[in-house]
Every structure is written in C-alpha cells, then in structure tokens.
Image (tube, rainbow, N blue to C red):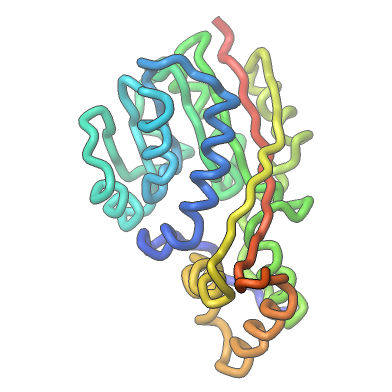
Length: 262
C-alpha cells in the first residue's frame, strides 16, 4: 500500500467543519473534569482554529490565554473568530514553546499530543511553562482502540488499499502510555478519564462534506473519481441513518491531568 502524506492543517475553515464540533463536545467534558477555578493563566498548546480556546473562554473565565499553533492559517482563522483581550495568539512549535518557565497556572493540549512528533518533548514543554502546583492536562482520540471520529473513513480507505495519514505519535493515546509519561515528567495527583462523545450529521452529504471533503489528510486528492465514488458507496453502506436521514457517529478520547510538584 502507498504511504500517505503527513497530515497538514492548512485550512482553518475546512477544519472548522471537520473537527471543531467534535472538539467542542470533548472539550466540554474535559473542562468539566478539570474543574478549574476562574481567573487562571492558561497555555492552549496546539490551539488550531480556536475551537477549544472559545470553549475555555466561555466555561472557565481565564485571566489570560496564550494560544499557540504551528499553522499560520489556523491561527488566522482563530484570530478572526476570537477578539477577547485576554487571548494572545501566536505561531510556534509545541516542542519549543516561546514562554518563560513557571508562567501558567494550567497548560493543556486539546486533541494535539499525538500530532507532536516527539510527544515526550511536547509534554515536557507544558510542564516547564507551568507554575509549581499548576495543572498539566491533555486529551487525544483513543486511536488504538478505534475511538477517533475518522475510524469509519480510515477503515474503508485501508480496505481499498489507500490508507489515510495517521497522527505520528498515535501510541501516546493509550492510557498506559499517558500515565507513564506524566509519571516520568514528575507530575503528581495523576488522574485519567475516558471522554465519550457523539456527533449527528443532517444526512450523508453533511457527513461526506465534513469528514471526507474537509479532512486535513487530503483524502480525495489521493483518489481517482472511481475510487472516490467507491469510498462514498462504502461509507454510505456502513453508516446507519435514521428515518429522517440523520447519521450519528461516536468517538472516545483518553484524557489525563496531573499537577507540577510544588
């Protein structure tokens, strides 16, 4: 089978259709679980187009948010959506954060850690910039147990001999790997939780536009017209629809939190 190109997040509007609704659903559960007090300084690492940043502003009343992402297109979209004075957007690398040590009360990666080429370095950077006693937390789709929203698409493309790109650090989505990493980095009071969410699409066309056409993996660009039609046929046969045509897809994520030693 051919090797897929790496996933690149270069279209903020397409990503909004593709992942933002999933991010908001999982992010709501994640923030409810973190239960942070208001008035904290946050680092939102891998902020993308700002879906989690928006949620953070609405639910957690932060004093400040430094939201960073390597994609200038994603950050441009986030800046268009969010004008809150306490949010600072920047373009940068999760493995080399441009922040001083011990700056933030909370550092989070929302659906990001498995995209970081060196997940240990990314997590260690979150620890570095977090204050003593502060919280370091992350959640990722549970890829190895089939929890990603893209699982139906991935499986059908695999069956066609056209595998879609996967995150480079998929193994870190395992609870065991997350707990081992948080422990290795010296974090205390470590807890994990599974986040189970669902998304309902108005009909198959809505699903196709959101999860296939808008995929940052560039799915359709790698397929011929015949192959695209075959993929559509396979997915339509696979995904059960309600009497009104709605399609509901479930997903699950692995979440972790811990505190930096005081």
